[in-house]
Image (cartoon, rainbow, N blue to C red):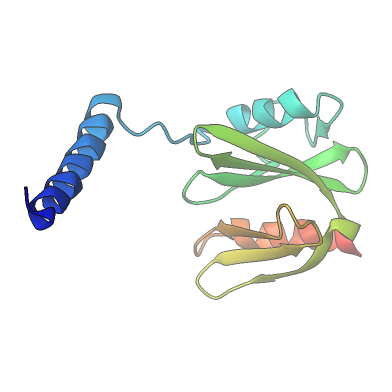
Length: 146
């Protein structure tokens, strides 16, 4: 069999396999459905953290538009904020303090970009859009970095 035909069969076969798996099992990407779930995810990894206003308050959660990441206002530990990110089918959580943050900026398109001093998570991009959540997130960052 000519190599060109074999190569074409491999490409088509792999493509069809990927489409079949996607169709059969769907998209299993995690998503933060709301404030309560976001708080639960953070408390699973950090049970001693205390969310501002109590465990079930939506005011303490600044959810990104795409529901894939959020910042949480915390009462304890003092001087920290919580970060939750949907990553694949799981979640990444962090407690951030002012000394962890190199710089941050809210861009005109509503994207808050936070540069961290951590090599394993050097940058966070949260898409807040044109709402108030981006400004509230900047205020929260100002509180812990000053």
